[in-house]
Length: 222
Image 1 (cartoon, rainbow, N blue to C red):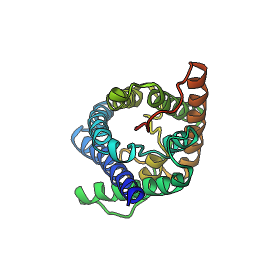
Image 2 (tube, one colour):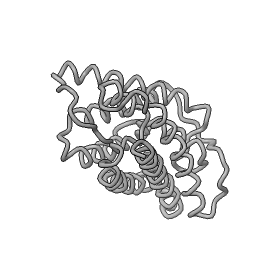
Image 3 (tube, one colour):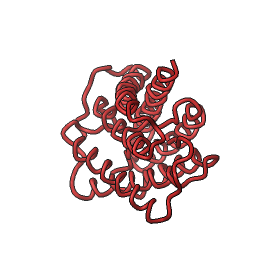
Image 4 (tube, rainbow, N blue to C red):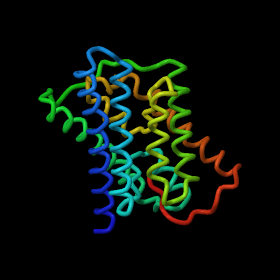
């Protein structure tokens, strides 16, 4: 029951996160009158608020990873049992897909769809690597009582300073493939994003160690 409860928290938290990201993107696009900057700003604010709340709610249950790259780093550090890594990732991916469908249902959109929004190129991949690098570094170095606020603030900033608008999460990439909306990503663009994110997470682990990373103590959330 302990592991089941954690997996349920990861699936539900990731689903709600994707519903926030995609749903706010749909609403922003509909209300912004074609002003892409305004739509992105609205999408950012909703994501920052939603992410902070979800981390606070689910962190005590599962660590609130909502992100396979983060779960992999936490498992590598010994703060998550290796046997739980694949179940965590599976729960996150399923939750991401369900979150996309939930967003579509709320806005009377077709549930089953795939994004046609191509996102690629060297700049986009570098941006995803940088976004994930920063996210993982914040998680590893933030004081436990401040991690929710610091992660939410960093993601909000990265929406604007990265060319990719900071997915920073393979589960988010997976979920957004199922939404042909403002926040979507075409399936053909997904592998490049995921690879860049995993590389960024690995570099963040190395940077953390060079900065004098502390030994694992308690499970970190994201």
